[in-house]
Image (cartoon, rainbow, N blue to C red; front, side):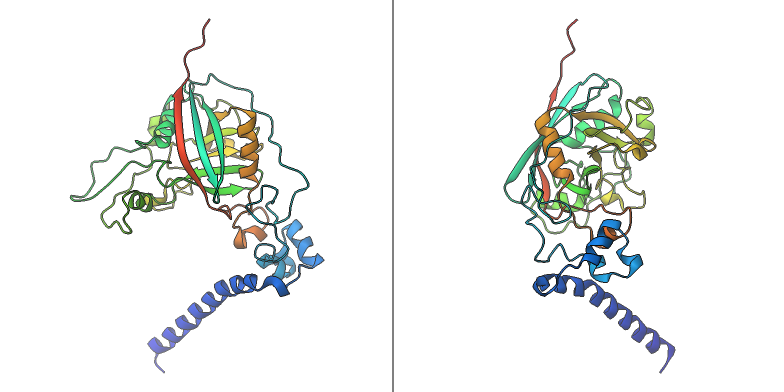
Length: 323
């Protein structure tokens, strides 16, 4: 057996074992009627240490796909797969920390049929550039970054939450993140095309554009705050994503105090009313596709188990206050 054949066989074994490790949990979840959730699995899930203590059933996560989970479309269904005893109540509406110059209303659909509205007020006087970027992203026209390097024959389009916008990630009870996971996919779907070969996505915003915005209008210390990256839109990820995915996490709304965000993010607005705060609580406690991240301490975030999309947005300007 020569070295090339040996390497090929080793690679085939690696691929086979990887595929099996991916498929088996899914197949077992579909047959979960014979799988009970023991007390040890429940205990390690609460502690977040299933892998460390060797509770593999708990690590795989039998709740989602098992017979003991609740229906994720039920408003009483919690992130742990169990029904709450009473309906959710939103946290208090934040006290304004700056003049609200724009109001944005986001119509959001959870799964199929459940629709709610988030009304957001934006601090346009203290963070004019950051707010303008977000307004463009929320509009039908979309947000674009000037470029002189587009290849001949290429196609490009502004990125907009109204085209392919979703809630891409939830940290239960902490943050709800909004964005467009793939600009090329969103553009293709808007044109009823399954493939776009010559599409050029919008690049990340130039960080120098937001240098005149207030460094800190308010900290991330309560629920209901609208937060964007300090460097501008498109800088919400790790920085290693492909440009096509740069707007996957464009802005987020806090669902509780998150002081760790103060270093790299800027609050530029807030939720405006009690009904929006109640809907935010619903979004922030949706069951998530946590996978392996859900059993590693501190890594409980993930996309919602149900598809959550932004169906529409409306923007209105707030007139100056009379004296």
